[in-house]
Length: 464
Image (cartoon, rainbow, N blue to C red; front, top):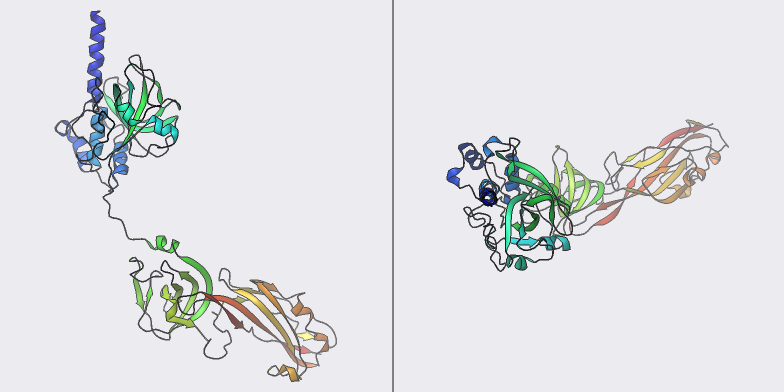
């Protein structure tokens, strides 16, 4: 009987040691320095875990019990006494009050925390999150855990806590809880350590595999979510964040500035739309740009993504530029950058009179430019045909309607209908004309398509 009483007293002493909080005055110098100099990110839920993991296996953490370790981690993360009780034990193992003073006997939460039982987890109402505190224990007079209990029902029970750990990530399942815990047995059997743990649990009951306190099965009773704060200032939206909110349409155009007061910007927005946008430099009226995309920003306005002739890149408001050449007569490559179309027609340098010939070659628009070839016209001319007034002279041609980015001439309608065999002897030439469709914004408030003209160089040959 005497031995039994001694064993009970020893067990009680062990539990008191595990559940007691180490006060700041008793923290050894090395640990105190560690938590006081810990580099916080400002996200307290992440920081409490980050600090806890940094202490795994550290010699200066030996002897620190589970509750004291949680408080030290909370201090490192910048929590205050308005968020966590810095001096209380987890709970008296012999009463139903306490739990770090997060709950009342009726289940009312304190310190603006949130609380959930295994019932909430099992039903899908809640899943443990990184930074949660998980409390383990059992209910007096019951072999069950809290799988059928709400927080209010659990709080009205006479339940015991034997340990507390910190959920270390968001990957826990109903059969595995991933934690970092203080007060773990060391290899020497005497000192206690901090350790990463994977607690195997019974999905239906929350019982922790292989863990008993005396003869009592230990359960994961509740999860407490302290009132964490994110003290890091919310950063300005990054360029990538802002661009992800805009609608991008590919295009490839020569532009000319109509403004000498607006700016090339770092983002397709004004400062009032996105404060992350800055000025690259002021635009010069009449200067040229190559546009590679049109962006509709979060305010519904359209901007060009451009490269300027001085190498400056950025965005210009659509109402501050126009497509080059559209208002100034005919141009060789009307509104198009020089590399917008590649490829050319190929014919023999000498064509035999009276015989059919084949035109080959492939015409392509720049990959990813948003351009489309909509019409290809092919015309043959000889010494009797005036290309400036083809209706009055003998020349042969054909056009085809398309909607492509690549067009092969050989065997196409353009090729087979051009009638080389009827050309007169002497100098001749082939002339192609392409119509292309591109995206542009005429005013910065709407997106339209525009038809652009492109004439490849003449291809000369001799009919013999």
